[in-house]
Length: 113
Figure 1 (cartoon, one colour):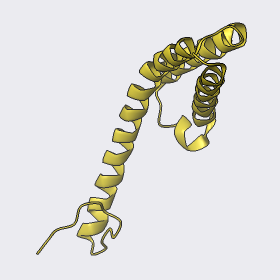
Figure 2: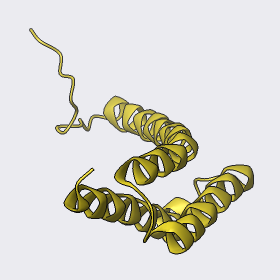
Figure 3: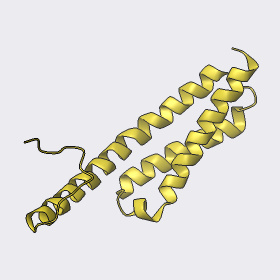
């Protein structure tokens, strides 16, 4: 791989890892994750950041990509679960609002005549 590819992939992995860490610290998300999921993500994140710190200079683009995929394999299922639970809660709340006469104009799905 070219040197630029290595830097690009390393930066992408680093950006993703720090984005996950910032998301985990957001007040609006802290309440929506159970302790087991928080622990899973935190451990995977710490391992990824440690790996980056220790191996970042010698790592290949493929190494960085593989490590990012490992982190994504832990983070993505948890985030999907969290967002699907949030969406279900909001949908239930929106359903109650609709039955009281208000409508959700931002809905992706609209009834067609």
